Length: 266
Image (cartoon, rainbow, N blue to C red; front, side):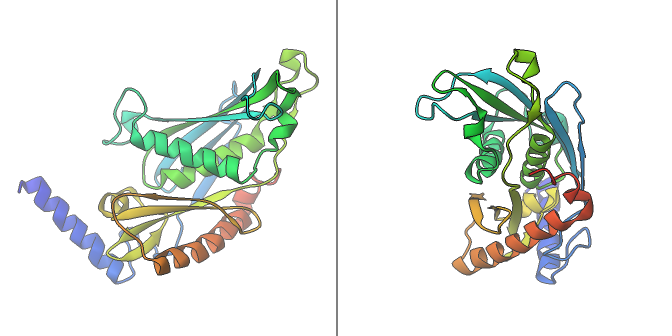
């Protein structure tokens, strides 16, 4: 074993021992979220945008909207397309080139949170059934991975959609108007470390976690999506406790005065 591997194992043991004492490296309790800040209107040339800071994690989400063809099986509904970009400068584990497994997972979970919660009334994005609908592109750019980019991405996507306006005037289709939003999904992510669950894991905690669990919660407290990442396992009791805590944490985030200010339109 190299010296670097020895140091990694010692650091892993250090984090595990802290968790067993219900403590964390950054001083938070196991069920405590980091500070969140959201700035909307960050990208001036996008139809909507948001910059999210979640602890040391930073990302920007841009929304572009343009007319296009509907999918054949949903001829009277608009289309959502979500992409993510994980640049090498944001993490030593991100590589240049085509989207890797992490980027694909991040895009899918973010998209699922928006789509399965019915956050956007897609039927109101139909221009001419079977011919033309509004297509909503959600682009997530991770600037700094300080851990839990999953929740930061979902927050950024929702805030950018609320900030967005459909550019009808540009295409001669009427007057610009907000997207028809119906819900504000919030995702809450846990990491399993030494048999315990911690909410909103940092980058260091994610590196030593057995697995992660992301739970997406609608405004009414119902669950609209779940995603487990990593090779570790979770017991039914751990999942039940995670669901209960996710519902409480999602409500706390919505109730946060500074966050609610950015999420009031849906």
